[in-house]
Length: 432
Image (cartoon, rainbow, N blue to C red; front, top):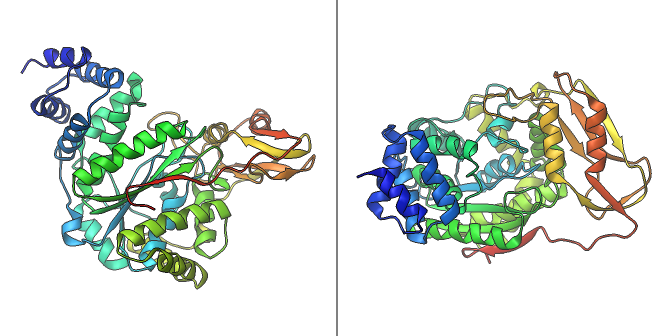
């Protein structure tokens, strides 16, 4: 097959055949197709889009480019969870031990962050000694010991995705719905859980800026899962401001521990419980009974106790005192009174990156102590001089003044309170 002709067919708007999709993915995984041709195909898909059949073929070919763990065969009751990413999104750290404490095993393939958000792997690296699973046997061992297996993508899982993702990052083809769906779902299907909960973010701090774009992505993800025999529930959730009140690796672990201990930020707790309800419903629980059980596990200490079990099973130390702490903190006050009308979540995310809490490029070192704490949310009344955020400075030398000015500018304060925006904008895939 002449792959240049395949590129030209997609460039001209034709639907690729299953064999052509297989050739594309196989060439990406074995190195037989050079980067310039892979990049050309990625751009053609980004511009021309892809049919539902092409997306399904692409997902399954990428899944089959490496090892398939098929964890659902050994642990059929296990549930997976994925978020499309957002600022202050510490849900996974709470979701996994909370759902496991209710008797439903959780397996997740977590990723590192890039851009204005921190990935779950980065946050877990703040937990002393924590080692994620890199093989099927390790994942099964963790599931048997604590009910949770948190994995990182290795060279053996969906290798085509690893090469294509790096090319997407440098060719301007990241915001392509077919390629996003293929990247997410190929890894989910390779892990092989039979139940999946999705959190598709919508708003200024997310990839999908509008409810329409978020619904399109959620429907595509749910459709791929259903066609592959996976039961999928998806929530479309608000990301017009940070979800939780912490940004930064160690800081977000502390935020998760507070929620697991029955306290914590109300928005983070509320969304985590909603997603956990969907996990238990997928496991056959009544929705009302599931919600009551989750609240009970948060109140009676069993969710927090399960976190400690999860950390120990993954080789880590759950002692909170070992988490990195900032060397200094800098409160950022409001310059006027009124009501918070809007918060630029993406802007705050980039400030956290500038403090050292994230990466601007692959290979950057994360400062585990760096980050910020959000004190004001949309709709809150504000007095002049009241702190909006607190910058948390780690061991990196930074110019705090300009960052504080940017942080203050991330909050729009007006004389009247804005209308309330619901946390959950829509439910798909049976999540009614």
